[in-house]
Image (cartoon, rainbow over all chains, first blue to last red; front, side, top):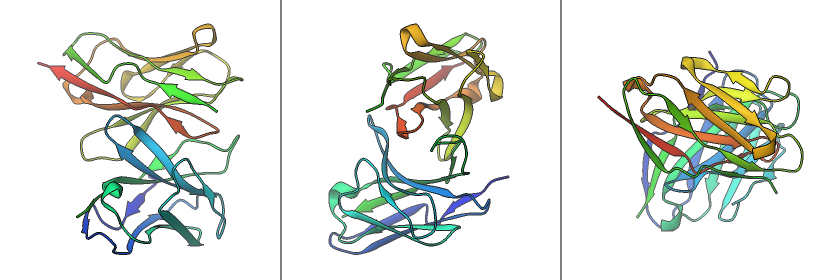
Length: 115
Length: 109
């Protein structure tokens, strides 16, 4: 089974803190993604990466950065957390296939609260 | 840009009843279309996908979806709902990685 793991299920941080969310996949997938999930808005893409050290902005990259130093690991960084970044963060991975999007495999999510 | 609309935020059905969840998309060509399910406390799991060919797609857990180009729709159906189907369901359009807002399904005993 494909496994996507996220470093924390729940996280509480203070405004202005630097926050790291880690994601690891074990299926040698080329593509990895970070989404945030908010009620009524569904999933919105923050960043994705199609290869090591490669990244592309999604729909809502402001306030976030990412790092992909190894194929299996994709990190989301909040440089200075703000209360409007309180959300559920989902990581996903997918193999390289026809088109840019193949089936995605999701982690369980990290619920981040910024106080 | 592609967009996905799920018109129903919340649906309640009785156990054993049939289910249809609606999804409409906006895209110039035939898109890649997906339905995912998110059970409470879980990540999203793929139910089914449509890339090309037969417009009626079978998925896991007894779900199916039909691609209708003329209506720009990809509705999800199940003939008899089980209590374990209670979850949030997301329609997604490929290439641009866009998800709908989701439909929360409640199943009454």
